[in-house]
Length: 211
Image 1 (tube, rainbow, N blue to C red):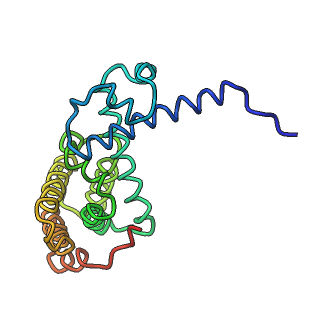
Image 2 (spheres, rainbow, N blue to C red; image 1 turned 180 degrees about the vertical axis):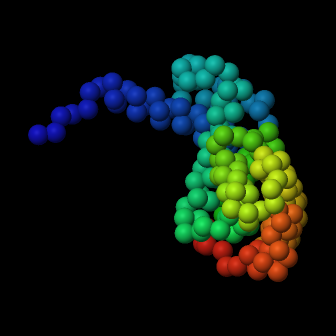
C-alpha cells in the first residue's frame, strides 16, 4: 500500500513553485525590457506571491535576475539538445545549433529576448548552450574535424557571432533569417577549418522542426 508523502514534501514543492514563479516573473521582465530596476514588490506581484516570500528564496534582485538568465539559458540548451540527438558530426552540431538558435527568435521570442539582453555575460556560462557548444568544439578539435585552436577562444567567436545575428534579426524583422544563419554557419565552419565545399553543404542541410 503506498505511503502518502509527508507534509515536508508538500512544503518543499510549494517552495519550489514559489521560487519558479519569481524566476518566471524575472524572465518576463528581462524579455520585455532588459531592465533590472523593477522593484521587488513589482516582481512579487507579477509572480503572484507575497512580498515577504522573495527573501525566502533570494538575497537580492541581482541574485534573482541571474537565476532567471541561467534558467532561460538552460531551457535554451535543452531545446537545442532535443533536436540534435541523432547528430554526431561536430561540424553539423555547431552549424545546426547556430541556425536553430536564430530560428528561435520566432519560435521562442521571450527566451531569445533574454539571450539578447543578457547573453554576452553568459557566453562562457556553465549552463545553457555554452557548455554544449564547447563540448562540440572540443570534440571537433580532438577528432581533427576542426583546426587545433583553443576551444574556449573559438566559443567566444561563435557566441559573439550568434548574439550579433540575433540582434540583427530583432532589428530587421524582414531579414531572411534562415539565409543569414546559413551564411554565418558556413563562415564559422570555414573559420574552424572545415573545407569550403563541406562547410557550404553542412550549413544548408534541412533543419529539425522546432515545434
